[in-house]
Image (cartoon, rainbow, N blue to C red; front, side):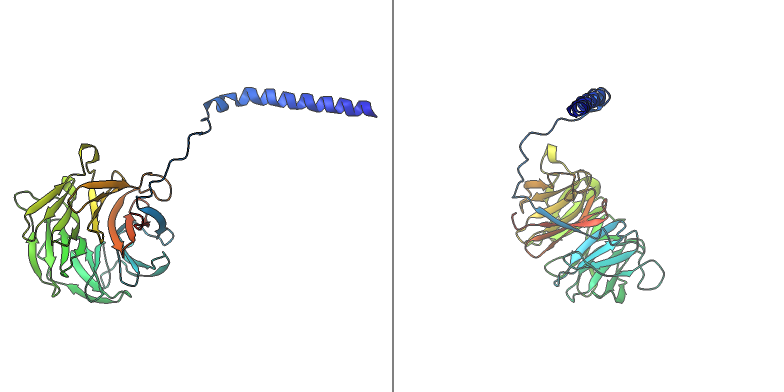
Length: 321
């Protein structure tokens, strides 16, 4: 009885040897072309950079989101060009509601772009196609259309300053308009000697200076209260020049966060205009950006980034920054 077992064992050994040799012959090209195992140590994470937390809206049907703002209750409002709607989320990313939509009724939108919260807590929304501003309650109820914009204004991004002035980027007039709480245009910032080109995001610092994402000129302009240039940022240096600037926001410490769309990064500057760093470090993974546009800071430790290329809003923590 031992002989059959010995023969069977020898046969099994021969079969396995043949498979190894046979498989080695035909798999060798693929094995030779495969990358060797990465034995390098894991890249150390820079803990001083904003840390990715989560994304909002990827499962809510966002289609070309434009801008974002967050109210005192932590509700996140996103203007969406593709659906002509405004989406409302909780701070954790749960969809609460939506409103707007295309049509000719007063509450309808065509291309919702900039959005801010005024001192009454209502939403002011710029419609770049209908060329007007509309006011909605936080629950999405239509309140009114603002009629005070100059003729041919094409409103883009919006921001609000410490003095409650709302700054309107005029995409066709290459200027920024300042509107007071009574909805009157009280100031036009055009810089005729050095014209703005397709201005996008704006922000006002504690000194009353207006930071403008001068998109068509690939730079950030810092203007004083009468529109004179008091600072100019071209990206931080020859190797850090902007590719295209869109959004800009200031954090509680006065640092400026600027979205550089083509380079898929956010660049952070001191109040003096000196470059601090860029993030994220990697363009891949959940934390990577595809086409970042508008930005919003909430509280002391949250940065919201509209990633139009990924159709979502990415949330970063600023607590370690």
